[in-house]
Length: 295
Length: 272
Image (cartoon, rainbow over the protein chains, first blue to last red):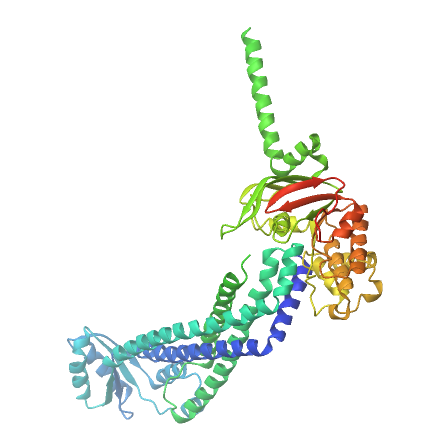
């Protein structure tokens, strides 16, 4: 493509988009709305995954030791637990290590870090791995019975349920998106059809004087792609602003709820809306041209 | 004896190789063009060979038409409405394909031409219609320039060539007017300028004076004669009896899809 035709291409696309401004706006909004819904599903799914992974990475059993227990007492207990029949592995951690881990899990909770830095309220403890999951409750009971143990935490079924929830969210998301994609596609096809129709005289003249088929087609394809990209941008701006607010609100209202970080979510939604916008715009313009610009 | 046999075999092989390489190199257009130059075809621009056009509804647009148009010719196509003049014109710019027979224009064989090749043919010809098909939102200058823009001409060529053509058709003072500010004759001149701006080797016109009063029609016809005098081949379907009779050019008459007459210096030959 020469520089001349590139100039022509962008001029024509701009002309077409401004000429059918309201129709173009309608298509951009439709794209934005369906991509926004897509992004919301991505946000939910990302968060479910985030929680699931956190829980999965967590140990099977966590035993916290009372603050007044001394280090030798703790180490003695460590030796004892090692010899319990169902225990596969045990790991001792100090409250400083616990604070470090917490920082990794809640990167947005700066207020929390300040508190921890001043006077660490966390406990020393043990991560216990059992030989098989069925032994978790009995080990938990045995640990609870030790005098210096403060409490015992374990999770198993939660992870399973969350994983299933993640699957459901993803499936519902794909189905809703498929339906929305069809609707969006039809709106863009119609916009391109209008653009072709309003320029039918020019197209006729172009054909008669020997413009190549792709020379005639490109402005319309570019128009479809721009509608898709503008829609994606709009959706992405709304979603990232919205999620920024959610992260802020969650940090205040549910400080211990592990929420996926802003940049992870923005990156993922940008990827999905960007690809979605380009795909829907491109496919729609190709459909429109095949149906309304027979050459 | 054996040695000379070997030599002759080697010689034969070399000649064969040479021929096949030549054929490969010269095949396609270049080969055809060479043949044409060598043969008598050098002056021939358009050739129809037993061309029949049948439409999907079974109607015959053209039946077994054969004719030749040489470079520099001025040809009138005459005949009653619906006789097949427009069908012939459509075949000549590749809008329709013949059902049978071969249409050849310059180096193009139109029946075997693909849609991708069509633009190459179109750039060689200029087309003028009865309804001029100007773009209403563009000025005279822009309408003419548009034809150059869409075939990828440079800004410089456009700025040089467009004013020349506009002057040729006598619209120098109207170049910034819009089509609806022009008379019918002036609009047709813009159409002609647009057809000429890419320097076609021939110009097709489908009843270009159909909507014009006799005086304006005569002006337009004079313009075509001038274009022809400058070297372009002109093929024109027309109902303008007086002008055809007056100009004494080649006349091809078509009736019911068949060619019924081909006079070198002909008359219109129909009563009104």
